[in-house]
Image 1 (tube, rainbow, N blue to C red):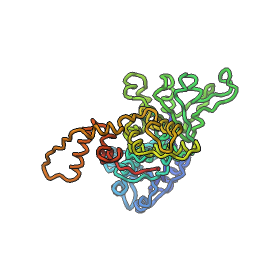
Image 2: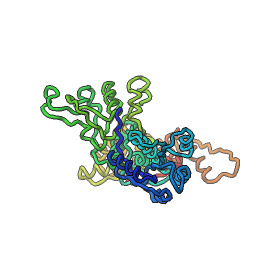
Image 3: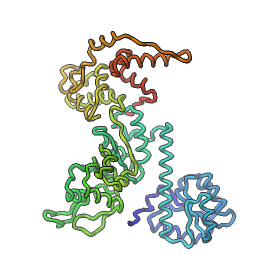
Image 4: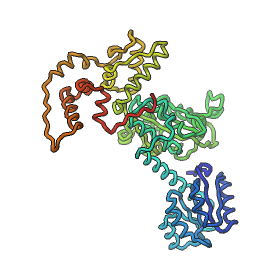
Length: 480
């Protein structure tokens, strides 16, 4: 497999530290020849720590035997002060003891002098990749510990106040700048394509986002032609050269929607593309480079598909460099009031109507509904209600498929007439939170687990009850 690593993708400077200026200059020319212009040379090793403290250094190439301060002493200081900067030792000493000593003291790798160009580039590739992964892990850990999003504006078109969705956004901010493939999974209608667009925006790649509708590529020849393109005269009817979607996505993102529907032959071709980062247009023997990052999405269960042989294991691990799972609407009920209001206003504006009022009873009924189609189903219900409503105030009856029987006064009267069983024993004198939980549990018992009715018995909203049952959820709206 050809190595497609490019030094111009390094975010930062390569620092060469050696007392031999001529040697450093030859290394610098080698790196520049391989498209790396961010190179710094330092012949006084006493200045290395202050230089690293200033920031911007991605990798250090350090001579092992130097005057003033030895490489061994410097290595320990660098690893202690900047553990995330890989240090590659350059040495003319080739005995095993020295090599083992370098690695034990924290060196990332070593290269023997005179330097072999391929060995140098290979070491730099591995060092940059490891450094990048460690940086992403640190950022993700900070996010999980409560650090705020860096660029919340990237997600302003995704309506949510769910802490689970905020976690998804933070993951996106962490992995988006990488070139690694990303797999998005989630039920139908949760917004996987919106997430793909958010990832592309967060990546800051110069190219554009190109979407591939896998469902329309059921034929192997159509898949190849659509993805790879063809040259003029490649087959009957090929009157012009076609670039293909990979070429259109050069330097950007290629998004495969519902990749779980991809046939076996197409899976093999996609696997080769991901492995080699190269492809041929139909009818051409000129190799083309794939510079697009791959994002794939599916609502399928890949564990089952791989077990049944429907999806290749090797392809799965290629597309799943990072995995982002989108929660269903049932897992983010607190978003329903925001979503219903947003799409009701949007539909009303499209129809030239005054934005309607959505009473609390309707919101409760919407939260009680089970959404097979997730947000897409909710959107359709809201649009139907706003379009056909004869009143400025929406009613439960305006929403198709919404059960209004559980919200009638008769039903509530029957439930309120049920005998109470408020009996409990406490090891210590109960506080108000204990008493509140006792009432919540009894309301849920009487209503047979119906949260909407339990909330009405308690005199609180469905959302408030949901928060009391899930106190870890902090509802902070990203977008109204």
